Amino acid sequence: MKSFFWENLRIALSELWGHKTRSILTGTGIVIGIIAVSLMSTLINGVDGLFEESMKFLGRGNLYVEKWPWFGDEDWWTLRNRPRIELDMAEKIQERSQYAMVVAAERGRMANLSYKELSAENIYIHGVTANYPEVSTVDVEYGRFFTESEDRTGAQVVLLGSEVAKTLFPQGNPVDKMIFAGSKRFRVIGVLAEMGKFMGAFSNDTQVIIPLATFNKIFHGPWGRRSITVKVPEHLVEDAKEELRGVVRVLRGLKPEEKDNFAINQQNAFRQSYQGIKLAIGGTGMIITALSLLVGGIGIANIMFVSVKERTREIGVRKALGATRSQIQGQFLIEAMVITASGGLVGLIISTLISMAISKFLFPATMSFGVAFMAIALSAGVGLFAGLAPARKGAKLDPIEALRYE
Image (cartoon, rainbow, N blue to C red):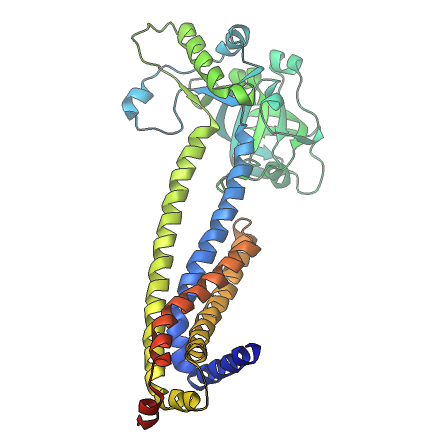
């Protein structure tokens, strides 16, 4: 049995090598289909990792009281006319909420920074309370975070994001150096550890952090982002969200029949939106893959019927020498599977090269062994089904009639 398999494999490879152009054109559909399915799976895995890394920045147990919802279809003018978030609510939320572990207030806006002749433009100035590290993933690489005393007195101290530090201080340690935000002077007390980009877009390293009281003293007016972050137990997020909604409604003096004039955001909003996008991308990829493999399978079936027709006399000779139906059928099935498996291998190599380029220039996207195995198995499976009907036709030929075929 083993000798027949290798003999059939040798015949199949010899036939394909003898019709190289036809074999390449026939396998093109399979190549495209395998590139689509393997690259889609690899990219989705890479984006999943990027998404989870980004979600760490928001925190699973964090709720954000803000004016604007992160997602939704509410009327823009209605949202715009909402009253701004008053950050002094943070202390009252801490007092009234049973679930709140830490409550931190923050504001933000863009500004230009400078140090001597060097400058950094459009940097996010992040004004936060001293307990901000307890509700976020920020970590100080060297130097220190500011104290409650510095926050309370509005000290003009600043922590630089890693990219900002490289821009303004390419040659040395910026701690204790003086920089300017507009016309205001700040003393650098620390540099934040590198945090990377949020969803591959906004860089968390192009920001600086200053005390909230300092922010309020320097940047007057209602502009910029305002938010109150409430850290709650992860397993009680939904209960805490309902309680927080009630607390904020009371603090805002809303009557029972009035709608909320604020939003309570959480990372689940991003997750739900991401899952919808992921399903859409995955569904589109699967449709493209199915169509490519269908076209490729039809092409292979057609070529195999032609091959059976061309080799009718050969089939008659083999049967006259004692070859069985199963051996003839196996010969053509192996030939069809070799075409598709070769196409799958080529598609896999191309997908791997593309994945390596994406991983180098965009985000980590490594092809797993499972995806590679699935691609080869899928391509071989297409060959098996596409070659089944032609192989059966060849196996059923009458040896005498086949020998008479010209």
